[in-house]
Length: 100
Image 1 (cartoon, rainbow, N blue to C red):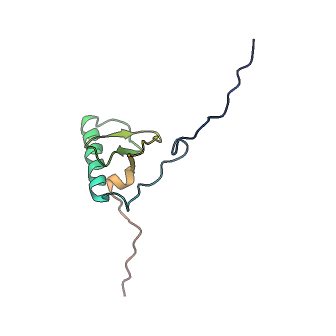
Image 2: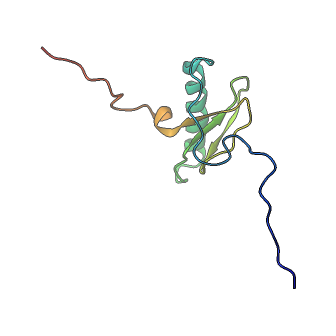
Image 3: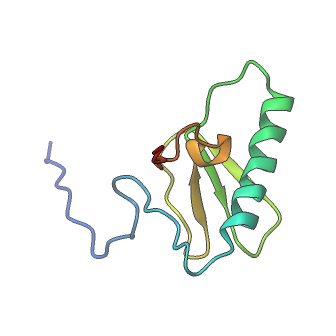
């Protein structure tokens, strides 16, 4: 029997390995994008109340739909990954107030 040799890919898909990068907040309307992701997430939670907790939501800025993801996604050029902590809203956003 011959051995199977695997070659390296001839091209690399950006974002295919590792965690997806944060959205380019300077190029999108973050308020609308996070609201869209929340709507998709809460629709998922309502339809599957005992379902697994997702990693986040993938949305397209020009589309009205998206998808809940449970593994690190590979994004299309116009898609954005919104992490679950942004969807739920953080309790502490890292700002400390000085009380003097």
